[in-house]
Length: 574
Image (tube, rainbow, N blue to C red; front, side, top):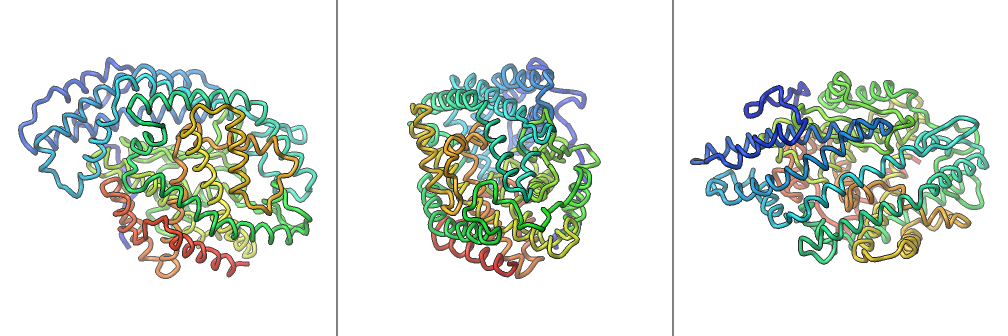
């Protein structure tokens, strides 16, 4: 095994004063100016200059990340909201022109050609790409988009419902879908959907504004639509929109039939005439819902034990984060929905945010975000902040592989052997049933930005059509049409990180490939996992997959092979 230490230390500042904090543009602008004006006379001076730039990027990026963490952990705190908005309206817009000029300085330097080609190839490629995309008129648009996108969490984070005279966030209320009383489950389902409908128009208006501004941003940069612009901005050099379309088709061909099979079995097990959306999480009468933990502290302690059994380094990463206070795990009113791992490039240890409510899927979320955290630790010592800006696809391989690897030690969450088996079945069923939703969200985004002038009615009509195209027919949504038409609004990625969703599908394929390795040779798979992740963004996406010993492919045959493997593993548990 490759051994690493989680004894992480903040980067030592050599360019900026140790006591400098990003309180205003005025206190950081001199450092941007100095970098822009500094004379560089050798390769050694150029590399030193790059490290100074990297230090400045780390400090500024971490400040922005901490503002976002504060704003999502407490959406009721006006100071946090104002601090977030201040950065993106008063500081970020002033950074962008400097970043553009600094990028041009890098690209034009004769010493750039003398750098290690293997290590710097992706970095310099991204720099050139950024230069091509930059437009001064897009600076204020990006600022406006950052503020607008934050409004989604502020809106949805306030959504609560009353169940049996007690107030619950929508995340907390989802635990009632495990209740054996079918009528009660339906009541909670309708309450959740009705609460979402209350803000339907607000979120539709917000999304329309986002589409308009994103489309304008793309047109300013000379693109026909935002999708094509965003693919380039995301540095998607290794796959195309046509690959995404192939992925959608393969999911319909090879995953939807499996999902339907699972739901047929579920319906039979529950002895129901039809399977409704409030039935998918419940167990047959007399079987208690899985209850892996009670509190957020118990969740993290059990996750540490699980990770430590897999590899002591993995467990140490979570221990360090707990000690630093870099965990906010439990759902509560006044907290934004969702979950994330936020890398903090200067201090090194990331921050995990989630909305746990004591359910099985919270375990999956915890180990998922823990996989992201492990990658943050592995890449902390890379020389440049930009090297830690790894492709989102490999980032999700880190997290989704951890979901599958960690199953071997889920007995820390489930002491009862039968419960452990049920938990593993739940996980593998989720691997299968999530693929159609990923394809649905991705295909919907392609339509949205290919047709940016659409009306709200056309948006709903297209969503409903695609929803039925990718939703297993065994799930009965009859009579729920008004809820179906609004279901897309629960996907925060559409609002906050456009076109960041296909990554989950691509990464799940990679994660299944790594899990196939793991089932044959645990140590080899973990070595390959660590070997690929520690490279950060210093290799192309296909090269990173190759380092992990997995295939980077969207082919119909490849997807069928992987899904057949998952199906066989699932059948062994049933």
